[in-house]
Amino acid sequence: MVEHQPPGAAVAIRNPVSEMVLSTGTDSMYTVVAGDTLWGIARHLLDQRGMQPTGAEIATAWKTIYAASTDVVGADPNLILPGQVLTIPGGLHG
Image (cartoon, rainbow, N blue to C red; front, side, top):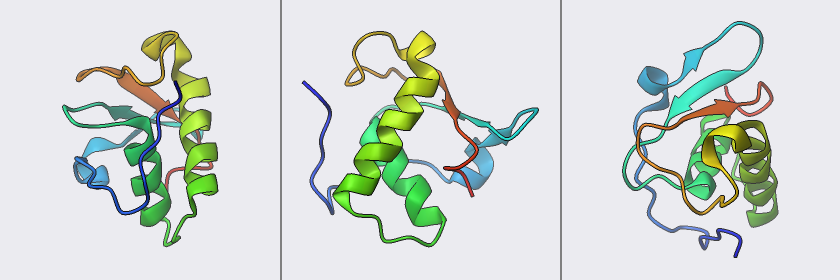
C-alpha cells in the first residue's frame, strides 16, 4: 500500500536547516528520525519553499524522494527507519 497522510496531519520532522546537508552537485541528504514519513518529509520540504502544496504535489514529491532513495529504503516506501540517509533531489530542497 502506498503511504498517504491527509492534509494537515501532524508530522514529526526536525528543522531542515540543521538536518539537510548539501552534497556535491544539486542533491542534498536527509537523515530519517523516528516519526518521519516520506509524505511528511516531502510536505515539509515543499512548505519550506513557500508553497502551500496540494496532496497531488506532495504525492509527486515523496515518490521523487523514494525513487532517489530506493537503494536505502528498499521495496516498501512505507518503511523508512531512523538513521537512514535519504537523497533529496535538487528540485525539492530550498
